[in-house]
Image 1: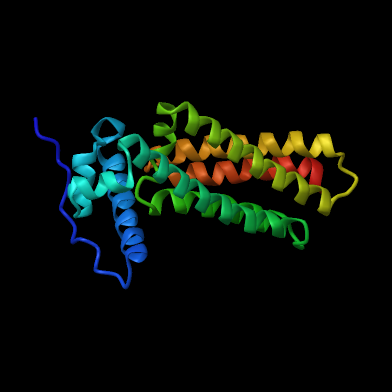
Image 2: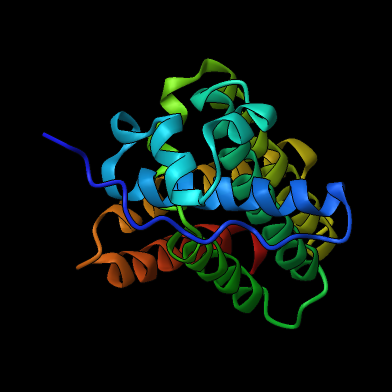
Length: 210
């Protein structure tokens, strides 16, 4: 049975120089890979399908990526880096905000929107399991986010010990990530689960921040 690999997009417009052209082509390839990952899963991801949907030749794709695993790695790193930057901005405001609940809730909502809006945002979490390297990198990202939250907690309430803040932050971030995974895979209950994740984290952190 032939896979539905979607409509072929127009090739990226000619850029002013090769660097800009390569960036546009790379972005088109990652976008196509994300769309295929959302629609067909990891099993349906292959370089031929990605190149066709991106509107480039397979030769062009291979000049930028060694194989489909390299495409997947680049997609995951791009998505995770964007999420990390957004969360960092919100966590930084927790230490000084009048009400810590507002930026905390917004951090979860931003993470949820990014997963839904970006091609591959809903599916890359499952794809992480195909690569020990990516799985370890994801764990490191979770720990880094927890470290940011722990520092924000201590800025807001210096009486919290360093070890306690780090432990609490890691629990809060890890639990939120897991609940977001579930919310993104269940579109019917996604928003309700998002609210539950927000309420859970708020109730837990209030034990230490109020």
